[in-house]
Image (cartoon, rainbow, N blue to C red; front, side, top):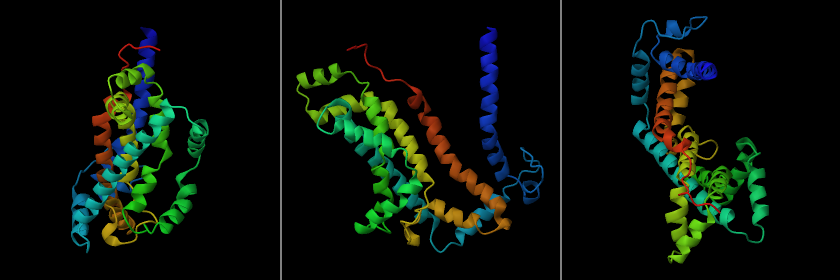
Length: 273
């Protein structure tokens, strides 16, 4: 009991340390400017106000591109990029995880090696490829690199390896073809993996600004529009706090809804090799 109590206290302290930035962001969004610039900064707001959000809506209302257009771009890029990442990553992971063919081991090693490269390193090659394909300044310039991400492939492959081969053999004996095995057997048993992949892809795409791939104002995501507001100067520090909170709410809600699936383990129905 002493050990459990100590462990609970230890984890509780780390939990408080982790939640501190989130509490600070929430309180900052409701602070007037004079409280935001107090030094040392205070964690909790003393005189809560909605002025920051009101100023944000006024600025948005004066934009020559409707905010609904920015929002549509973000939703479309996030949904299409996440869906393509999960589907393509899963379909590529299935043969690598369950079949041996010439070059399969080499491909698996290359996937692992590719994870060492930061997105900044691959930005230039991605731009050259998208430029050669004529996809610069289109939605596809953001969606395709996300779909080709090896992180999802690596995650799905390592999870699918754990699925017993007996389940696949049983499905084939019942007349299932390869696509049926993938869709009806592998995907349900890999639910935890692809939900985790959805969360990772969603968080990555929700905050994207289009980078150097999208230049047309009508194709820019909402994060770009909000970043332009934030960069307007010190006078908009309060508005920046409100923007930070708004951009943070959606990923947190998605994670809270999906966390039980992320931490759950795969059920194998008691079958052992």
